Length: 267
Image (cartoon, rainbow, N blue to C red; front, top):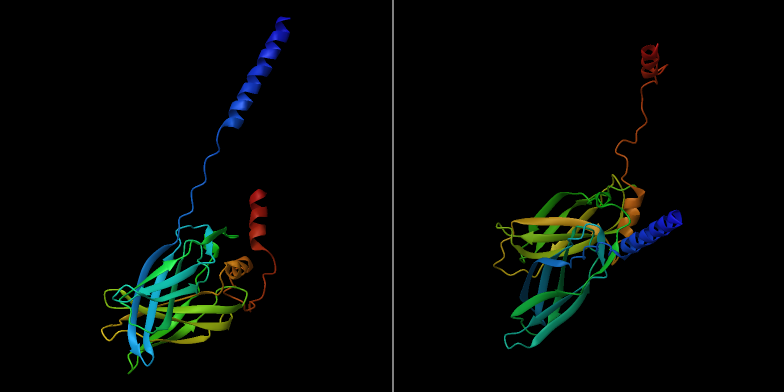
């Protein structure tokens, strides 16, 4: 009888422990941080049919494991009386995990804006299919920034593809900065069929800058095109292209000397 009572007590104690373990709350996952507008700049110049409004900005993604997808920036401007003169939605490409997205644009408006601001819709977050280190940047080289007589700037250079698969389309964006590093404007263009070791040339023009703008440098970046991170993930899954692809020219060893040394050591 005593043995039976002890058995029942142990079973009851085990049930209580299991209940306590299952009732414990699981640790909460850290909340995803929203995109942040790191920089923005705008300008307006007189045109034949009103004014040309130009803008540039940089969105930052502080989440190292998630893509920010289906992002839309809205450019909103008002005149001196407070009346709205521009409200333009601009769909943006996906923001890579822990990365930044540079963008720019232009729009004609009938009246001169006194203030322009960039707003943006909350991103839809998606867990990346690869670790952050698998997403490599697209190398940009031989960049030239050439001022033109009309006040615009031509930016040209070459962009390469570090991945094994060819890229159908890349977006190349140039942000113009003054000597202090302040953003003054930007522009973008597209390059197609980018293959490893065969970097295509890009040429883009940044116009609509005010006469007071003093451009010192151009910060050029390239990214995959599309509102989702799928194109970038497909490249990362394929991996980096091998650096050395030439066949060896030396004759192979007649025998594996390392194996011979190990055999002699064992004897």
